[in-house]
Figure 1 (cartoon, helix red, strand yellow):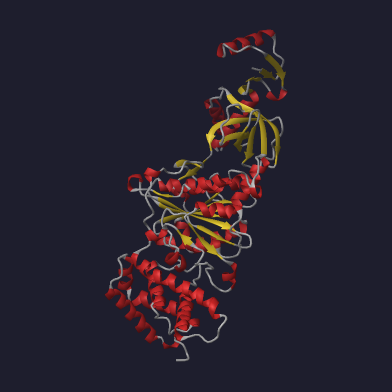
Figure 2: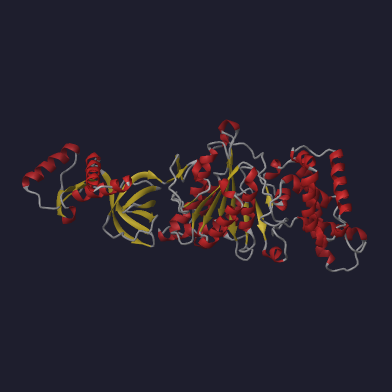
Length: 74
Length: 506
């Protein structure tokens, strides 16, 4: 399965290693075929796509969540 | 709000918010056009599921294919772009229902259209639901009084029945339905009017009529107007019946009017063609029969063990040039338990409601008719059938024997009695007395032109001085011979009081 890691800034080797171990911990049987992608729009944090599943921990998504939360409270 | 206050509140909300870091099933928009999205990814999306398109917009999954998903957008979706990610929500389409929905106008997604507050859900009702099973149903046994003489006497509708109203444009289809709503004011029936692909101006008109007659105390409108997307129009009747089911579950009797299902079929055809589903006759997709059958199957009469509620459905179909053999009309005729057939020729001849009594039928309603009505309606059908036969025949010959002339006169009067303003529904006991007078020859002496006047005066007379008589009729027992004689005497004495209404030649 294709894995895409999107970040706002380029990852260093150490960060990549941490991410890889986190993924293989969650999906032990998965072959790690990681594609790196840069997207400044994320502002910070990272997005991991595994197949059509997405783990979104980007600052952009967090801001969007806060926005909907605030609108709801209003 | 003070600035510091705002900031502390703000940071509190942000602190309290738990970020969703679980895996989301997402997809990428491959193309978007005419309200239809093709999305790659979304591997585990289910048919009928809602998809979050971002910016508070939602879409509905209709097609599942090997490498893409077909989604129809349920909002304006101006900000969508190719390559954008969309998310599964795991939710199935539903509408917020509560007792407070009565008196409101909502769209098929439950958003208010009348400018009042949002409806808080007591229960989320699924738009697509399997109809009640055989074991929870019982046969139709309670009348649904439309207040229209021609319908209640000859095409009776029972609670839980599905009766199609079919006719060309401008023949009074909506008027029959609206008249029926107006007549439910004292019948303990909740009405839901579903407007599909109608002009907003007509909806405004209908709203005004209902408001003027205080019908909003028991009526709710679900509307997807002509300016709404085809997908939303396609959902409207399901939203209507979902609201009806909310009340059905409480053991209530509900009347749902679908105005109209021709436009609904057209909206579904549009969606289907855009989704590139194979088309069949008249370019409708193969499942257009199922589209209406699964909707109308949800009309039901539940038995006591299941609450005893009912959903009566009055779908409306608009025909083109009286062609009932077109695809959608034949489909819906075969699904429903009968039809009320309206004709423009009759309408133009001044027969209002323009019901063609010969072609209209009700397959189950007669078992729900009250006995006195059955008594008078039987001879009425015969009178009218004879009248129609003779009418054609009498056009050729001028001198008719006395018996034929008598039958013609009788028929004309019975026919005249069936005319009725759509906004003047009559109680069933009042209908019975008038039909009784017509079929028993008590109107033979009344001038044809004065029949309408006679009816008006006679009803005033009954309401003011013979209340007990009306009460006896509405009990539903077969009229005994003395009661029949009493009624005859009342009518005869009334006729004597009003000599101005009788034929001048005598």
